[in-house]
Length: 265
Image (cartoon, rainbow, N blue to C red; front, side):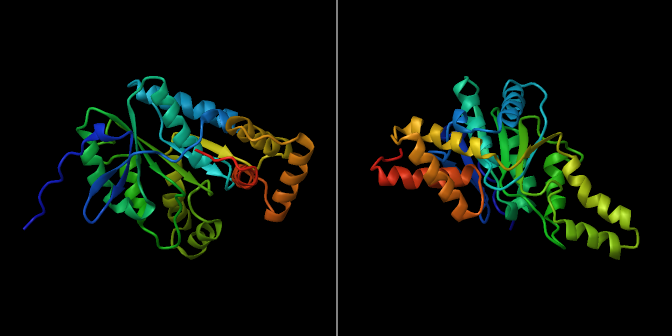
């Protein structure tokens, strides 16, 4: 009556995979949606730290799980995908596996599948956060701590979140005010983020950094525009969005490239 054991995937089929459930499977991703590492402006320290950590892991050396937290649109997920490409470009056969937050309860099955493989994997969960009465965070401990078996030596976990402690402040305050042992209730959930050995903060960019991002995109893709026009249009664009970030810079660039008749490969 039990389902047949999951067949070992063909990890040579792709450099990246997406984990799906019902049924459990690793779906190969033929082409990862990402930009070059050199185009990520204003996050140099985070870039260098994550790249160094990932290279250590890919070479079989000790490395830390990483939590990338902070302002939206500042390249948290982009840097994970770009670092993966850079590590592979340096000759390391590292695989990237994306895991959706909703599938965290199945992570034990995924780890068992990866545990016996000769390849090394970065398990990536984008936009990770937890709401009130959300028990998915308990499944995440299997990745970070590994329980009695321990986290597989060939698996590292990277997550991005807009929240440093992975849950909203009002949820933390509610736990503190309603629990019999307030400190213990808060400690259980807040300590989850402490299990990440590496914290990388992403903060809103300056106007100069915002403009430098756009100049970098233009140079990379051959879009020609004079500096004065670009500056005026880019500042107007971010004003209409009410925000200034790497995502807004990319959105302006897409509009500019379209108007200039330049296709983005």
